[in-house]
Length: 246
Image 1 (cartoon, helix red, strand yellow):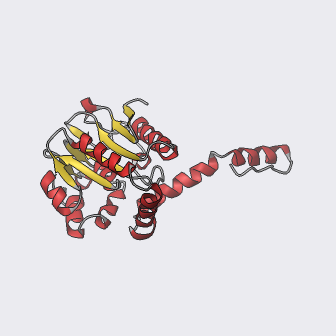
Image 2 (image 1 turned 135 degrees about the vertical axis):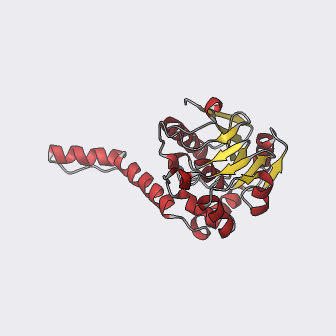
Image 3 (image 1 turned 45 degrees about the vertical axis):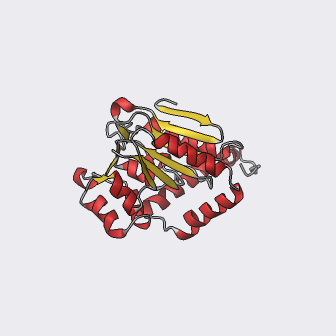
């Protein structure tokens, strides 16, 4: 996958945005690559936790690359791929725009001391709308300050308001996230999965953009299914279809 690195550290799968010369800005291909990596993680029998990060210390990501706009929802945890396994964000440097969406949708997050969070869409005149979900994850007024006033949030304040769990020395976010992943891997996966399922499906509200993205993914699965191709073929051949549920 171009500009997406994937490797394992024991039971922890690491997925890294790998375009440091462009601040790990996310292209269409990168979003699709992250989605594919998350799909593989969800299906893996050995990977028990995942870390989402960016290479280099300049930025976790500058968000969507406007020169090659991605379907960013594909790279968003619990949206691009549904999984009840825990996902941890490891953030160094700038976390901009859609990067905040990626981070807020992870189950846990750790950042370096120099990390900065910035959501500039109100200044750019464009939005995907998924940032609305931030109000269900940190205090309402702080979320609106980030989204409406485009204020930059420093690492220590991000920890204080609950955007991240812990601030560590610069360059140590990934190691800390992997350590958390290994700690989670030693716990009961059915319990972890059920807790995450209840939180993400029954407690945290989903914003309209998040619901739309999940709906698009489900409809896409039907359009790409063997049954769809069989139905079209049967119609053309004027015969009863032989559906197989896949």
